[in-house]
Amino acid sequence: MGEEKADPAQQRPPELCPELCIVGGGPAGLFAGLLFARAGVPTVVLEKHRDFLRDFRGDTVHPSTLRLLHELGLLDRFLQRPHNRVHHIKAYVGDRLIEVADFSHFDPRWNFTALMPQWHFLDFIADEARRYPHFRLLMQAEATGLVRERGRVAGIVYREGGEQRQIAAQLVIAADGRSSRLRDEAQLPLRTLGAPMDVFWFRVPKRPTAQNETAGIFTRGRIMALLDRGDYWQCAYVFPKGQADEVRTRGLDAFRRDVAQRAPMLAADIAVVASWNDVKLLSVALDRLDRWHEPGLLVIGDAAHAMSPIGGVGINVAIQDAVATANLLAAPLAMGKGVDRLLHEVRARRMLQVGAVQAFQKAAQNRIITPLLDGSAPVTAPLPLRLLARFALLRRIPAAFLGFGIRPEHIRSPSIRPSYGVSPACRSPS
Image (tube, rainbow, N blue to C red; front, side):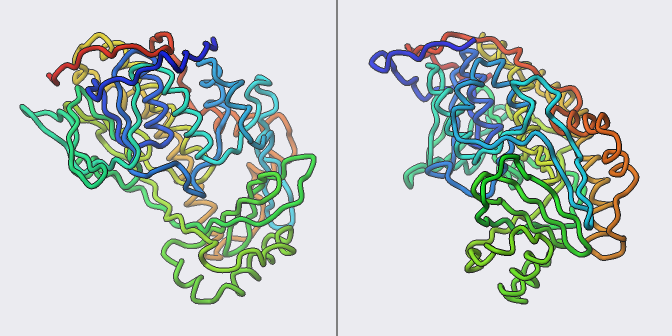
């Protein structure tokens, strides 16, 4: 399915007159931009930062996303970028090591989770999107509000280079994250499900090993997740929500001692965390919109449903949103048709998976995380984990849920050849 890159000498960027304006250059926004441009829809993506270089964002590319990249003919090129492969997920419960999920029985092309810095993933998707004549990415362009005409959203107001500007579009997609400004302006109803914890992220050097050692660590009062990135650990230190200042007040030495006690494999190198500047706070949220749209506006990804870091599925669920959106809307938009009457179908399509993942995360918070963090539960493996430890075949169940979810999406949107040319004429929103 791969296609040759166009001759750079023949490349000509489209005019800034999109049918579609996507706000947010994260996984959902850029993946949607790629799919809509691939379908021939004049598309502009706005990203408020100057680049994608922000650390400790979601770095797990699950089998579902790897399969989507294969369906686009991009998987081989994608896997040329530096990454680590996780075929098994393990957990230390007290002193017991339990294998929880086994991806290795999937198709060999995607029988693992790829650990890759998110900026590499976003750079890759942006590079592929730029191969299409209908795509444009504006960096350092921050959306500040919605434009409304005749009772519907007709574009956005944004700031670029110190100037305020507007983009008119047939459809605006808000993929601007869990603190979405456009979602708030549209006053879409947000349901908060609650999260009992926050997370400190940091790095510790690691000696490379033959097998990837990614694992969770469950102890009384604290939980940790260690992502094996080859020559370093990407570490998540989980503590009760709102206690970040309390942890900091105890001092960095106390923090390092606590980490070394709970994760002995880090003890020799934890001194590399030299100041609190090396530790980044993630304020965990679990919520979702009851309605994802209004005429001319659709909200997807974290802006529509913030996920807990449990399972590391957030970016992959967001990408599935982008695929479902393009499957439903790309063809009519490419033909210049209005799509307002179709917007509700995106949420209807996606809520089975979103609801299932959030229900799983909420149950894990209530039954495992909260009791461990407040010290009210013994640190012993519950029956489901004991069964996973005993019966290897059962490990395929959590692997399938985390790797693909319920009703995973496939690429159904149309495609044009990725060569540059003159963009279609602009149309006014209707």
